[in-house]
Length: 283
Image (cartoon, rainbow, N blue to C red; front, side, top):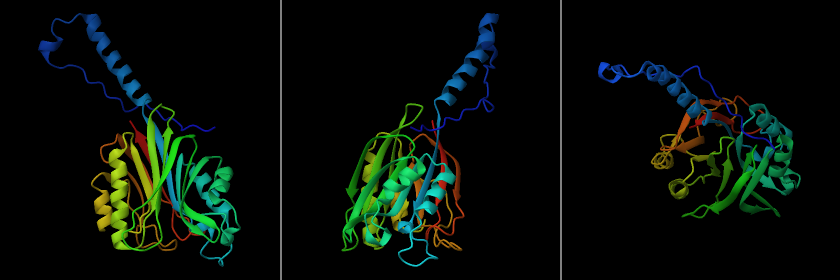
């Protein structure tokens, strides 16, 4: 099975030696010589315990390229995006399972096989004898997985959140999740409130991703920002000449993450959304 890559470096370590004469005065020369060595080893230890995590979030439009007719499915195009990104964790929205329009295949399972990853699918609704929802993929096995139907205060398509726990190579645990918020404003608020509750109750560092059908200044995003923060900004929809951001990767505000990079991937064929990609460092 695959494990997350661990990236360490010693090039940015700064040694801070005591400078006050009253501290230095009287210390044996051997002790003075050991100070920078001990600080150097301490810095190496802290860096070695950090973990780089790459994340891809993608609304795949049930693998139906918008330039093609309904019923044309190109799951390999989605797999190519995932493989090219080499993401450790992947979240997918608008995923079919055994639905006639996409050839009655289990898309999450098929993508996991095409990308050599573990997967978990969460159903939002029944659809034409099959199921439709979201999925999470991981290079490392999941410790546990679960899903919840999101509260809907107005009648609409049922929404769901998929959550999984992963143990990193460093031994640390992260909780990875995804959802696809509703189009109706009141439902988006109730969806966001549920995610907030999950973030607050999770002890491990929390990552939330998804198509939230909301722009950065909207009420649902402002509500989520009480506990979470977006790792980057950039228009993600539509796929050609995108004009607005509705897809997000978010992390817990108080979690020990550092955002290394964020980008909207310039993919125009496979779906009606553009995928987003981020690299985080968990300390």
